[in-house]
Image (tube, rainbow, N blue to C red):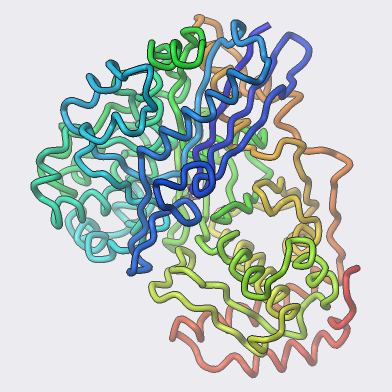
Length: 547
Ligand code: XUL
């Protein structure tokens, strides 16, 4: 029976998983992760990105991502799995990141020396040694220029699914063209991290997949083609530098000779790679409209499938293409695990102590809030980093932890209202979804049942399932998405966390405090003291702890 390999090249780590599929069963038979900082220290990353004095400039190394693939392939080769059964592979990558390559790139990829690791061999093929990643927020000017050139935010959002966002690829390309014109001119092709890594695997240029392509501010969401007004407004000659866009199920080639010989692998099919959020949509089994998923990863994201693209008129969220051919709504918060880690480290705690502190504090935190904008925030847009404390002393570890966790869940709920989804069930995924105390806050804030998954990384699972789907389509057969995900991309029923009605009502009140604090911190509203007092009067019972 065939094996399907999925990769997830995320901000901080690379994960791989292998699915063993037969008619009746789908088993995950391999799952492994490596952290870039630890596994590949020579690249000098911290939390997967290159240190920079300017907090708005965030970049990583595309050569490091490829060396990580090489290390992971070596682990796979040693795993004892019968890799002669490997039918196909696909991948998920952090969204928005771009890789600028020269005209010799395809030759370099094809002729890699099997005795040497790939990263060192790629240097001469890169027109830009670094990749700007989704945490970068340094392109506000380019966002404004792009917006003006295409006729305003609404036009851009209606066409591409999102207004201009700093991390999106078009403003990033424009900034590169403006600041490094010679290197831009030397760029033959601009890939996303996803299409770049797929290209490396097949040894020639792979296309961009529409789910990830819609994170660029360049793709016409309706036709899934490049949208000329945005392409022309971004940088001269860009149309020639963009790879074609191909459906999610496209088999982009077979594993190149380099990887076959280096790791003793067969020429398995390689299916187009996508972004981590579109892959997670599949890995959480969200192939129908209705339920939503919340991913608590480096970023926190909330997303769900949409049959029709309901673009966000408030300008907060995004509509991306879904791998199923439908659409997905998504709101992204950059201070997800980054913020939780920052708080844990500031108080010198382990994750279990972090969790105990959360359990020892009362839901509602007596109306006290900590807005966790330790790094520049995407939702709402915050350029100057800094946490904003409302009533929480900087030395109060437990109050800070609850203040941050509640503010994060309240922000997820408030800033996803544009999606117009009645949230009854939430599928929780990402590293921090292992923490049931955080999920209890989620359930209580949303007033929804929350479920966990068996598999640690749903983006990676989604990639493996997309490899399966692409392999089936590539063989000239068809398969409904509900059948693709059945029996594996399903939450574990016994993990259900129920909302408490009283706490849900209390969080409805706290939501107003959160909104007032946010307005104040953004300089758009007065002191939230009154809102906090009102909350305390209305919810005197908010002092008891959850566990
Ligand atoms: C989504 C986004 C993040 C990255 C994280 O728009 O920017 O979720 O995809 O890898």
